[in-house]
Image 1 (cartoon, rainbow, N blue to C red):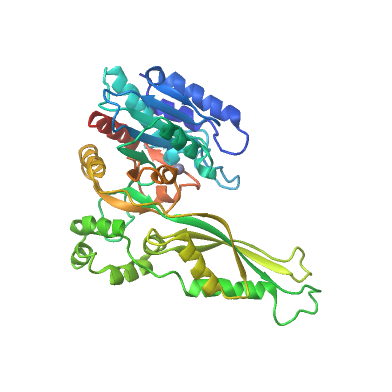
Image 2 (cartoon, protein in one colour):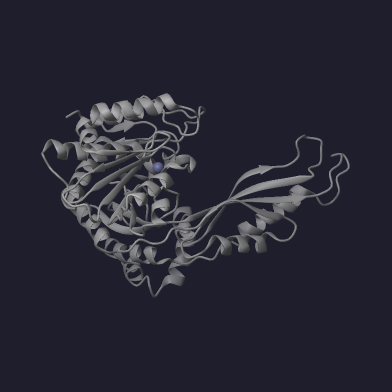
Length: 432
Ligand SMILES: [Zn+2]
């Protein structure tokens, strides 16, 4: 079998950025996948999906309770102003890392899944149940191929035991006071809303400005939102995470985390203050991402607009969150929803979750698995609308600096961690 690391290197070298007409890059990726994993493509039935999405069935000895392993083929673009240690699409391998766009998000898992399947086929192994592989091609632009895969599976009457997508990893330095790595296994993800805030006023010449203006009205609304963030509280998966983290921290924090259920209110308040990352665990977040006003330096703005990107907590609805923004922003700005989807349902801590915990304990003995709420959006939300048992975890290690490299500069994956991740998937497939 071909070295999986070389397969990953080849995959990174294809600039599979979605929505930019880079069809040849996706064709190249597919050619490489077929060349590196010939037994997988021979053993699997392929369902035809548009736009280079891949949906494959690896038949098992039983067809009931199949599982779905997911990853996406596309990557985010590279900012040309960024100065990478090694060029983003060269996939340089040094003593420690493989560098490049997509190593962590998420060609590492795409290739590790394929390598695990290929390896098991070489060994003559047949999975105990059908294994579906769903590799979308437009996750980063919230595209259509994951919903199309859901439709295709529904048409075939597939009722997965569980679905596994990206969203959590084995992280260090993510939670204050916790030293050892923790495997955050996403049970759900926050919702997302883009709101446009618009303030209007009379225009005119900038030499004779009135006391009130569209930008000032908009600024007042933005500051009001900053001063009154959404209320902080702890959803159930976060309470379960804190309970499992309790043995890892020192007293008196240990007792507080062990009793997180009773202490939801004070713990939420503390976490909301510790860091932006822990604050995001406790509430619907508001981020002003875009601003615009007058088209010229000497013309008063007749309207000023801001985009508010809001991540909706799992215990809230889009509607509730939008109503609160309208109230806080006041009546001098108009609030329009331009994009919205609800937070996902929460996957159960049942036999599938327990299996993921066991596999993690076996393949990564120093890592503590914990349930988690994913802050960002993943393709799994489309699956979870139909099948609640969707989990989000890539079995790779990530330190704080690697975490910052996601969608950013110097994205890189440890070679040893990539190999460990393949063993994790192999163990999972053997234990189905
Ligand atoms: Zn991703």
